[in-house]
Length: 154
Image (tube, rainbow, N blue to C red; front, top):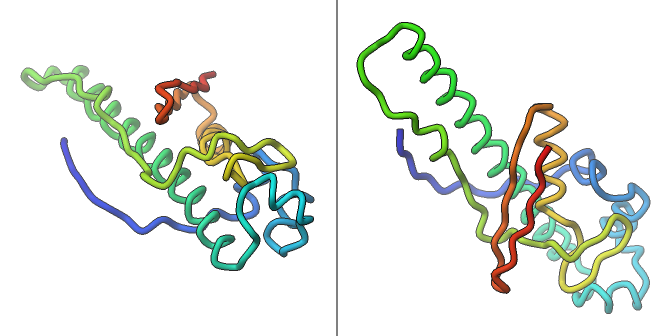
């Protein structure tokens, strides 16, 4: 049941980003059309390398969320089959399905602007993509270096 792997973060798509952020804002950022004041508010100068890093950060969080949910669903289905067929003893380990993204945590971004070194809110994008793909209850929890917890549940 326990596996460990490291993956290269995929780049987030525009379709994923606009589940959470204003499409005009997304396009302005991706195409380098932000004002100097907007870039200063974000904390980074615009560059193509930073666009790729930003898309990788969001894409990795989306991939981690999808991976954890898919593992949970597979494990839950397997456990339900074992219960139904009464196949010996087993431990319910569905609660152990998790994944992480070390470059994530960009929680200071808003729908149509960024700030605090955050362009897009990777956690909100991941939650919205997950809910769009699997419209079922989900919980995404983040602990950051300020020991706060941000939660989204449906």
